[in-house]
Image (cartoon, rainbow, N blue to C red; front, side, top):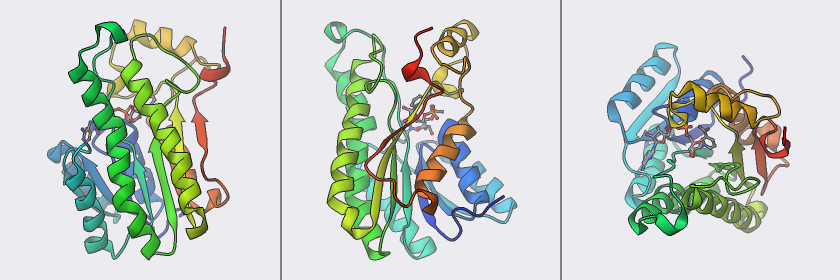
Length: 252
Ligand code: NAD
């Protein structure tokens, strides 16, 4: 395996399952020191144990990404454990309750925006100064095709939050490009994670929306994130990068 992230210290949120867990494993195999965040402490500790068992470097801290203090604590943990921060995969997210805007409880709206969008603001606020101290780095936000190229009924709050991340990505990239800090959004297509549920009929419908006629494995999205975090993407910033299996261009 090529050591694409050798000696880079990278925060990964949503690391307890799905895309984030796949990224934790992949980035550690690629030489990164990983700092793992999510709410479930036991799952995080198990993943840290697996990485250490393979002689990788990992630490974790459980918390809620909608909490500003938690975003700060993850950066402090990276600096204390590994001497600094080189990148972040701000990936934690959830869909909230599905439902039309007119029927949506405002509590659901607020929660979806807090976890998917406010979390990005808090993350950047503390990660940018840490990256600056290292002379540069890379931030990746997990957005979605939902709210960018596809309007999926019932997902208004999620779409608003995810497309908000793309807008913030562009501004951050413009604000910090001259400091060698790159910022990109990654837009996965339907991916086989706990978020996608376990209803086989639903999976068949979702597969049909993609040009590739299948859903992604979490490792395929993790690989796209790794590209954006690595020096291979040294001239890529401000992008909304689709890794969506052709979901956005497929009509049949
Ligand atoms: P998942 O449910 O397996 O993982 C989500 C992760 O985020 C978990 O680790 C969960 O604990 C964490 N998380 C959720 N809310 C949190 C909070 N408040 N604080 C801390 N951690 C929290 O789902 P996934 O598919 O791996 O999702 C990862 C990202 O990919 C999400 O941002 C999601 O919106 C996005 N995404 C997923 C798909 C898909 O089809 N699975 C498609 C497009 C985008």
